[in-house]
Length: 416
Image 1 (cartoon, rainbow, N blue to C red):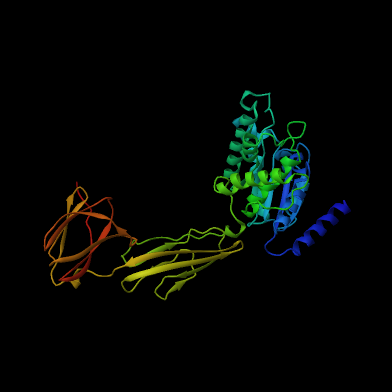
Image 2 (image 1 turned 180 degrees about the vertical axis):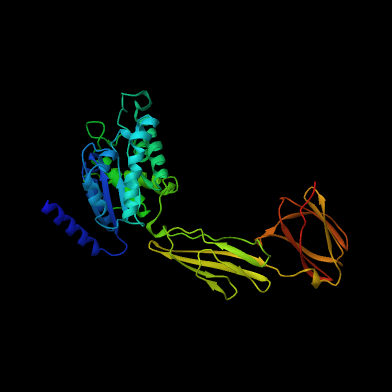
């Protein structure tokens, strides 16, 4: 036991010496991880590409997600440090079983492990090891009795688990299928038809490299016992399946966890705006409304004192980094009093309107409550009247420019 905790302390201290661009990764799995020592192959592959990995693992042969949940050593490993990634893998068959069985005996424990990771460190990411179908499938059930059938059910289950756990997947299974379909002479399986050969483990390392660093493994000089041609094929396969489909596998770069996205509305007057940050993992907010005014509130309200086009910017900062969002709004404070003649507006049905009373219209613009320009169809026009139609029903304002001056008028609701 002393040796175990001494190893933990040594490993923890080793993390501190790595530069900021390195990643710390914990594998929690079983024999699919320790066969041919996947963590070490991945580490050597990354190093040959100029990237650093600090890796630890907790792998017990045949362990299910439930086995890991019930093992105190699992939580000791999770709480060892603030991991960038924790890789979770179930027993090779369990996610491919009937949905009801997976829902009862796999999904809850896979999510419980993920919750433990997030509780330990808010900026840690959980990534599930999407394993592969057995060489000839699993004969105990018709729905998984071929490689393709079993591989598809594993793919479906791991994506479903990842979605429920707010996690990503390392798509080994789909990459294995691509290699088997396009390069059948490359043997990915060991003699038992289940565990990986060294080529299979190397392919898994390429998949994880792409999934963790969001970079292609092509050109890696570390190839282990493989010949150069085989290694290049496996590198290219991982690039094609992973890098070309990052969103499919729900992959997020470690630098992009913090998020802000501005949305806004104007519910009082056209010059008063309610802004929302729509933030994730953000603790500090820095708003610039484009008119010299600022705010540190998450969702501020701001009133503009003059007409114009303003660029609103939000910088959000938090424990997982920072993010910036910006949006442009149009503010027009003109009103009917600025016209030398009174302009009347009528709703004439079918979402159409008539404006009367101006002299020689120069320009007509329609805006919604948030100041966004709205398209309209001009039906007819004379020197002192115009009829136009909007596509959508709602509350809108029109800005008119004529020889009489300028005005901003609220359009009435149409009556059909």
